[in-house]
Image (cartoon, rainbow, N blue to C red; front, side, top):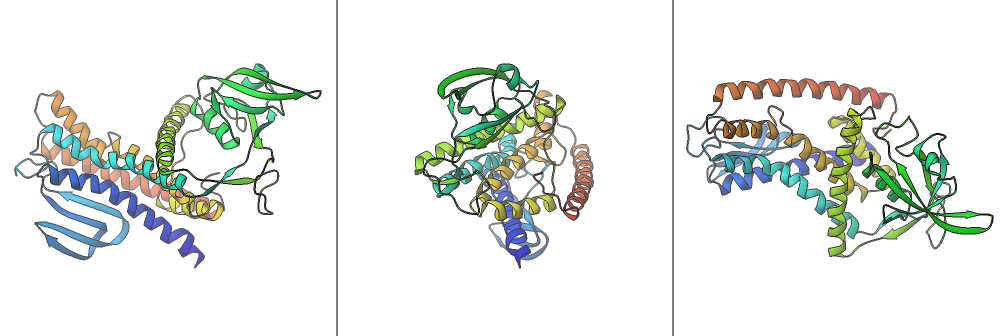
Length: 372
C-alpha cells in the first residue's frame, strides 16, 4: 500500500498531467490553424475507451504513461488539412507549442507551492568549512562567517546561499559576510571565483554551509541537528512573481549543469520513468506532498528542454526539418526521408530508454537514492 500511495499513483498522475499539458499545446494550436486532429488520447494504445466528436477521436488508453495528439499528415502535405501542408510559421508554432506549455506550467506549479504555507529553513547561513586552497580560502572567507548577501541578494538560509552560488558558476561572486572576532562584529566583503569543475565534495567555491538555529523558528524532534524551520506563504501576486523567478533560476541551473559537464565538472543526472517514480516517492516521504509541486515543475522544465532539442522523432527534430526547409527557400526534404529519420530516432530513443531503465533498476536494488 505504501508503494502504491507514495510511488505509483503520484508518479503516474504527475507524468500524465505533464504530458497532457504538453499535448494540449499541440492540440489547441493545431485546431486554431485548421489542422485535422485525428486522435487526442490519454495514455498510449491499445485503446481502452473512446468516442468521436467533430472528426477527432478522443480516447483513454491502457498504458498510463502520458498522452498524445495525432495530427493528419505530419510529413506528407498531400491533404490541405495536414500539418505538412501548412505555412512554415504555422508548423513552427504548432510543433513548439508543447514545449512552450511545459515552460509555462512550472510558473503556475511554483506559484501554487509558494501560495501554500510551507516550511523553509530558518537561517542564518553559516560557513562551517573552508577547503584549503579553494577560491573561498584564497579570498579570505573563514569558518564561522555568516553570509548576509551574495551579489547583493539577501541570504536567509543555506538553501538561498547554495542556489545563488550555483546560479553564478564561472563568475566572480561578491560575498557580504558578518564576522565576529574577539567579541567584535564587522561586515566584510570578499570576491570569490565559482569554479565549473571543483574537486569532489568542495562545491564551486570550496565552502560548506549550514543554518544556525535562532530567533522564533519552530523546532521539533524531527528536525536535523542544528536545523529549525519556519512557515512561509505568499500572496497571489507575490507567489507568481516567485514562481517566475524559480522557473528562470531552474533554467539557468540546467544551463550551468550542461556547461559544467563540458568543462570537466559533474553533468546532469539522467533518469527514466523508473528513476522518476523513485524520485517522486523520495520527495513525498522526505519533504511532503507540497514539495511534489516543485518536483513536477522541475520535470516539466526538463521535458520542455528535451523536447525542443533537434533530435529525430521529438518536436525539436521536426522543427529542425522546417527550419531546413525555410533555409532552402521552401524546398522540402521528401516525406519518405524525413519519416525514415524519425523512425531511426524512435529506435534510438527506445534503446536509450531501456539502458536508462536498467541503470535505474540497478540503483534501486543497490538501495541508492536518485538524488545521491
